[in-house]
Image (cartoon, rainbow, N blue to C red; front, side, top):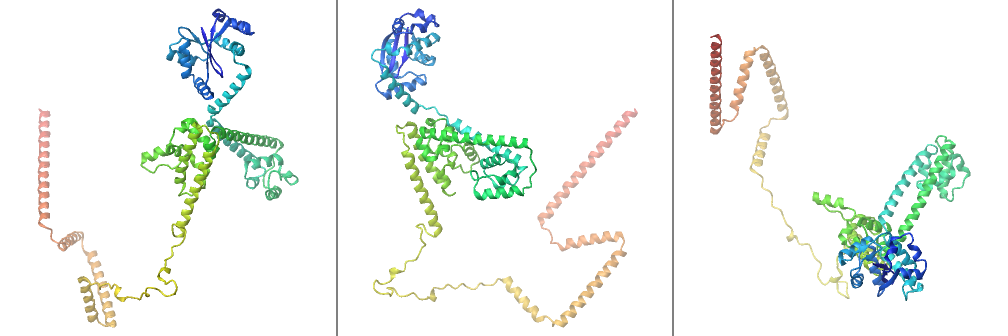
Length: 555
């Protein structure tokens, strides 16, 4: 049996001399108490040394994911023919068994053997001292933590959001509870943390006049608070309520302090993992982007257009479904550069910021540098672009694209030495005027005008016209009285006849219908006659059937 052991210097293969001792796991540690007893149990068979730190780092990262490296596969194929291999990771053993067809073993006895080998490693391997092994392990651990740091921003961001919610609810409870005693304080002190500190220091509002709030509040707010405490309209509060309110204030202050510590931790971690992304969009926005993408490496695979709308997927698919305009930004909207831009320029700045952010993320995830130079340069370029866009807006509002009002050039027509013009002054040209032709009146207008003139010529004087109008009014009134009397005296039959006469008059007044209309009426009459005859035949047949039934019943 062979044992695979990983060291910072390379991979080592040890041969187990006495496999019977593996059956007694409890007594195995005694065999590795000294170097002489350890040499009786295991013996070094082969050693594969790493060429440089990058080779060691790549092999270590693959081992973390339970995958054998290319050098390890060659090393095992060379020295493990027909023998079982003891490994410290069961997943690594399965991978070796699938790819190299080598039987692997992993149990409690193997783990105890690994502990003994780690204890006596420098004695079992010649040429490897503790002084050289320590710096190698330290350097490998630092490089491994830098390249494979498993920091999850989604947890830190989620905790920050939860803390903000809890702080808000606790502060509102403090305001609501203490507001019964001192309701004017809510308008005077707007910040929740300052409000909690003031309530904790003051307690009862009667103590406000004797206390000093200079460490918490500015002078003008402090003076306003003391004036309001004297004339407050709040109710009295008991000592037990004040005690509970102060304990709630302590919780608010403790949560705010912990939130500050968590934000500092997130800031330091983001500067370590993604310095260029942090310099470009900030700690919170960068952490939200990494959390939404899953990891920094997954985010590095995304193009700039995806990073631009990351976080607005619901709005994007709704816009595609309803055939409306797609969103211009998602989580990146909270970056400071987009906040500085005018509403018209937010789309342009978000597009360019997303492109620069994609480059910064790729450099942070795959590059060798650890500085934030690319992020700072990209931010400076975006700031200049934003300033150029704002200047264009100011120029367009001033009257031209260059920012100056348009002035007609007139100096070119003057002579260099004299004040006279080269070309003569322009005079007014009446021939250039356009005269619209007079509109010819229509025939109907002409006839109406003629009739008006005739009526005006034949009209009587004003006094005669007034007398004529009075006589017409008297005649109309007499006619109305006669008609009303005739209507009262006439019977109902005459009324029917009168209605028929009226209908006839109305028909006579209407224009005679055309031949097509008469034909249609005749057709309708024929159809109605046919329907009447059918109805009559149906009724007669029904009567005959009833008569037959009666006869049959009588018989």
